Length: 280
Image (cartoon, rainbow, N blue to C red):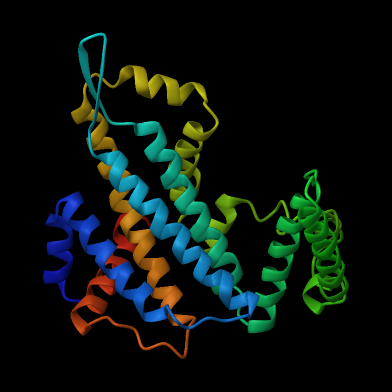
């Protein structure tokens, strides 16, 4: 990869990168719009794209300084906790996409993991109380889908290749064995142990209101300190997004992507920064 492109990416300001990445994602979105599919496997693949697009735009808005006035006093802040929670959600979204659509070598294996992921979500919804007749009917229909998935999945060679304790976990409703933790999936997706253990665990503290999250907020004396910390995580997030977008596009074989050669090279250059910033 041309080092000139890499150097320019290093030098770009966060907002400039945000605008560029957003424009690339909108072009990718416009390339795939209109290609409706009833195939659940491909339909939800696009859902991962939309989730990451929306999360990213929310992060962009939160990184802009927020002002409010109360009792004739004006305050300015940058909500680091919400930003880090969303960044963590982006990582988990990518890890799930990778676990289902990228890591498995065969299409049948990908479909097996997708089916378990879908079944797990439907089983969770079965626990909700339905009040409307329409909702009750929906739960009945989904219960039949769950049963169909279980019959097919539990007779799959991929299910039989799991360890006994892993099969037991899957049968109880999990879509991935405990062995395949988020940290483990991060490493399976190409990230090193340091990233999986330190960065992901740090972000998780904000989600669960651990001591460290409150400590970080109280120790940050001004908005500039918060923005400097956010910038470090955002630069890693950009690389994760480029990895996702390259892999996302590679899973479609019938789409003419509306990206110029220069734009494709930008994504490849971002992706190539992965070993420099994250891997050993």
